Amino acid sequence: MERRPPVGTRGAQRRARPTGNLRDGPHHYDATVTQDGGQEITDQDLILMRAALAEAQQAASAGEVPIGAVVARDGEVLATGRNRVLETGDPTAHAEMLAIRAAAERVGNYRLTGCDLYATVEPCLMCAGALVHARIRRLLYGPPEPKFGGVESKVALGELGLPHRLTVVSGVLADEGRELLQKFFRDRR
Ligand SMILES: [Zn+2]
Image (cartoon, rainbow, N blue to C red):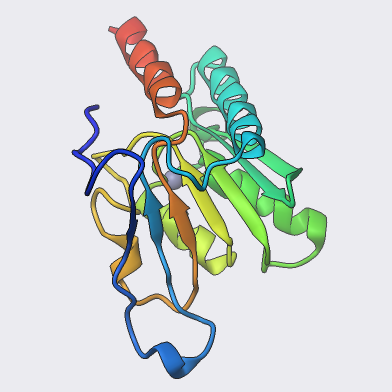
């Protein structure tokens, strides 16, 4: 999976065109897309993404496509998830869905206000929808996912005019997330 060439220079930020009327209130999708090495990534973000990568590794060990996710608030892990579609026979048992469900259960609210989601690869269309419903504050992920990616690959999530404001940081530890997937599919041949 090759990264699409970044818009602008490495480390540069691209603020997506806001949709709708800015005076409508706070519910604007405001996707700030930061490419690899962008300045919005903190050491804590990297620690949390490594936790998501560890989940992905566990998925691989269980014979599942290695994708992991973490939901955190103020740096504290609320829930983790890993891809479990084979184990559960559930096509919605994606890492992000399971992490969002567990986090919502833990906080007792379907709105995960102030929460950040870390995913080892670009979330699919279903998961991108779920994290908007969950009111996730920031989404951080690794490499793009060209087949099902619902943030930048198949659709530009920031341009759909959805009623929620969300910051997107892509390319976080992208090589590691990509390598897990590539190794998994290589080994299966
Ligand atoms: Zn998904």
